[in-house]
Amino acid sequence: MSLQNILQICYIWMGIAALVHITMFFVTAPFGRHTTTKWGFSINNKLGWIIMEMPSLGIMLYFLIYGTYSLTNYSWILFLLWILHYTHRTLIYPFRIKSTPKKMPVLIVLNAILFNLMNAGLNGYFLAELSDGLYNEKWLCSLHFYIGLFLFIIGAYINLKSDSILIHLRKPGETGYKIPVGFLFKYISSPNLFGEIIEWIGFAVMAWNIPALTFAVWTYANLVPRAKNHHDWYKKHFEDYPAERKIVFPFIF
Ligand SMILES: NC(=O)c1ccc[n+]([C@@H]2O[C@H](COP(=O)([O-])OP(=O)(O)OC[C@H]3O[C@@H](n4cnc5c(N)ncnc54)[C@H](OP(=O)(O)O)[C@@H]3O)[C@@H](O)[C@H]2O)c1
Image 1 (cartoon, rainbow, N blue to C red):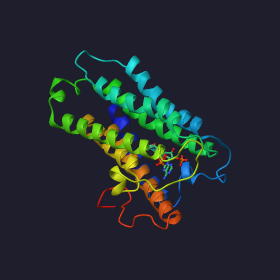
Image 2 (spheres, rainbow, N blue to C red):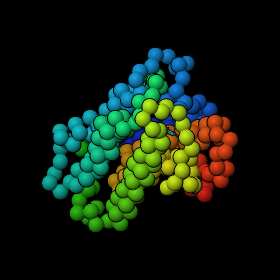
Image 3 (cartoon, protein in one colour):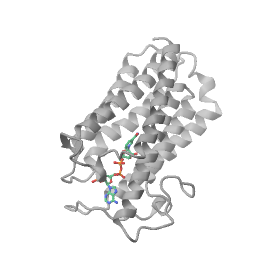
Image 4 (cartoon, protein in one colour):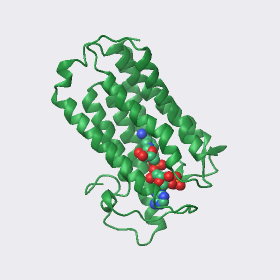
């Protein structure tokens, strides 16, 4: 596939992200606290996470191993960051979340598989087959490489720490919800989602290519409405929910 084809797919895919973004403010994705039986057949929550995130990990590993590279192509750094994130999301995170009777609709799993096939496919193919000459020594010394890497690391830290706080809110055997406190929960309802958005913006700044930008746009499009759904859910379920707490961007939204 040519660069031109990949870019055309990216622009269409970003257009779809914009539509999904608007839709998600009206239709809540039914997993986690928002799960419902109305979306048809459901499977175990942990299994759902593993199945839906596996394509992203598998595709990037495939392109890293079987891609065609020159010796001066440092795109393996971008592969490594992506693979680290998705190794955690696919093989560690599902085993860290506490077991509850909640299930995940298969439709959500299928949607997420499509999301991951497209985003990992576009990014993996670009890095493995179309990036020769782009990720050289000059790139390693560029300002956007360091700014992007810094954002990626800070975002990953915020995401992991916030998810840990949430996961540890429940004592063994508990299945309900509590108001999270501390760290960035002082300012926003979903610092885990904020961290993930920062992380992939950082990746796009580092990589400085259209497929990486496309993935950052999709992450934003997905997670901002999800954070709004979480925030509204907290306000509905807890009368004493802190009024000053924003949704996902400290002091802003
Ligand atoms: N790249 C993307 O587009 C994308 C999309 C979706 C998610 N993600 C990532 O996947 C991770 C999970 O996302 P999510 O929206 O499912 O997160 P979440 O609703 O905040 O839940 C995270 C975990 O903490 C538990 N939890 C959350 N709030 C709690 C509370 N108040 N009291 C007790 N337990 C609580 C949840 O249990 P329950 O499951 O029982 O609610 C779940 O196990 C995040 O790191 C997110 O960034 C990424």
